Length: 126
View 1 (cartoon, helix red, strand yellow):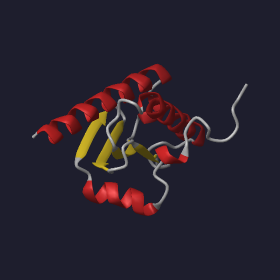
View 2 (cartoon, one colour):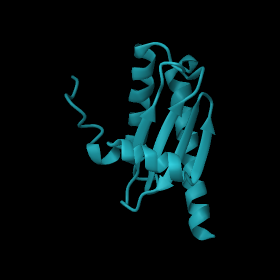
View 3 (tube, rainbow, N blue to C red):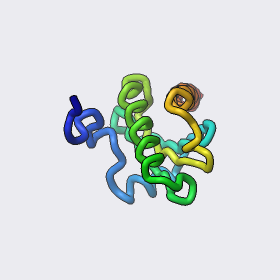
View 4 (tube, helix red, strand yellow):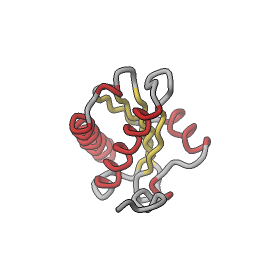
């Protein structure tokens, strides 16, 4: 059974406007690399993370691949949201991202969120 709409990924967890994205690109305090992926993040003061996705056709040709990557990224943030710091994250796909299978992608994202969490805590402690 499939839940209709975005119940699994509520709007409060998403970057919704061009301004939200611009803010992250202009003020990215954190940068985390994974295989085929890169995340930029900046603190948002909202008390929870928000995710924006930039998966260009140039880097991920087929729509079916872009959609799979997006679905897995959203799922990953939804499952990790309680551990993630209050930052706005823009996740970018690099060339070759579509070659990762789902399990590898999950591991990549999980590791990236852990590093992001660590970096944010470190910066707050200093």
